[in-house]
Each structure stands twice: as C-alpha cells, then as structure tokens.
Amino acid sequence: MGHGWEGVVLTLMRGKDFTFTVTAVEQVTERFRRVRLTDGGMLGVTGVHPTMWVRLWFDDAGKPHQRAYTLVDPDPVAGTFGLEFALHDGCASDWARTAVPGDTIDATVQGTGFATPDPLPSRLFVIGDPASLPAVNSLLEALPAVPAIIWLETPHASDADLPIRAGAAHHDLRRVPRTDGGARLVEEVRAALPGLLGEDRAGVFVWIACDTGTTRTLAAYVRRELGIPKGRVSARGYWRPDTAKTR
Image (cartoon, rainbow, N blue to C red; front, side, top):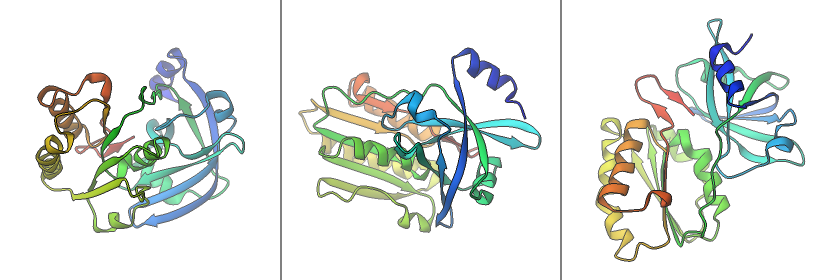
C-alpha cells in the first residue's frame, strides 16, 4: 500500500522512509502496550535526541493513515527501540493490539527535531499524560540532574501502573485524574505553578504535551500570564479528544 498524498508531501519535505520489524510485545496495562522493533537502519542515519518521534503508516480501511510515536530506549548500535501505545479506538491501536514478532510496519522520519535547552535549565516543569509519557520519560532521562516537577494526567485507574521514570529524589510527581476535558489539570497547574516558580525564574524550562486544547491553554498561560520566554517553553498537542488521534 502506498502512502497517499501525505506520503508525497513528506517526501517533498525530505522525509526519510524506513521499515521496522517487530521483535517483542508487552501489555504494560490494560490500556498501554509496548512494542519492540528493529529500526531498518534508521538510527544510523538520523541519530538520536530526546523526545524523538517517527510517523508510522497504518491501513485504515484500505487507506493510508499516519500517526506519530516517540522512540523508547533507542539503541543506535543495536538498531533497536520501543514504541508505547496508549490504546483507544482506531487503526493505530488496533495494529498495536495484534502486533506479533515478525510483523513489519512502514515509517517516515520528518519534523522530529528537539534541542536540549542551552544552557541547561536549573528547574524543569513537565505537564503530560499517557500519550506523551514516552516523551516525558525521554526528557527526564536527558536531564537526569535537573530538579523536576511533573504533572501527569491520568484518564484511567490503570494509569497508576504506567512506567514513568520519575523516581529520583529531585523529581516531584503529581498525578491528576482527567476530568472535564482537562479542566482539572489546567486548574491544578495554574494554582501551583506561580508559587513554584517564585520570583527568580531564570533557568526555568516548561515542557507541555497533552491534548491539543489543554496544551494550547497552558502554553498561553505560561507565556503570557507568567511571562516565561518563548525559548524556555516547549508545547505540543499530542492528541485531539474529538478523534482520539495521538502522536
């Protein structure tokens, strides 16, 4: 199956195509599944950086459909990595539910750039959810010595068992049940963040990746009302509640 007009656009934007092969699968929770793959030579070409993601191509009733997923524990020497899927309705989750070793899937790498803050932040504030958890973990591992406060929105009870890598003494993990389309998360961040920032906001870095509406609201709040410079804020919507499309 070809990649349709989206594939043509990505090719024109110098996207690079690869084929991955499944080597193992693991059901982490009832709504979270990990798939291990070989990279088809990708990591040797692209290198690795924090929060790196790829576009996977799925068959959606005979039509090509692409969604983006963050690499987990990429190993350029071995040419392997993992992908983690927050399961919901849709062809991407259907593929993850049924994937077995030996299965292959096409992928395109384009638009994945993320620059580690320079200079390194003295304090890190992270706001995410199960869809962005692999990227949250990647960021925490890339900045292991930086004190971090992490708000993790949890739509389901089983999210308490998600594999978040926030076990260091200087990590403060705050789980927030998802209610009212993300309104509780927004409320809790707005209530706590000004006091946590204090008067000296030099060296702060804020990373936000939730559903598009929540991300947009919090990014505007951090930049406009709290005055955090644009270069010290990274915000990207990872999914849309109306269609449950994730990245």
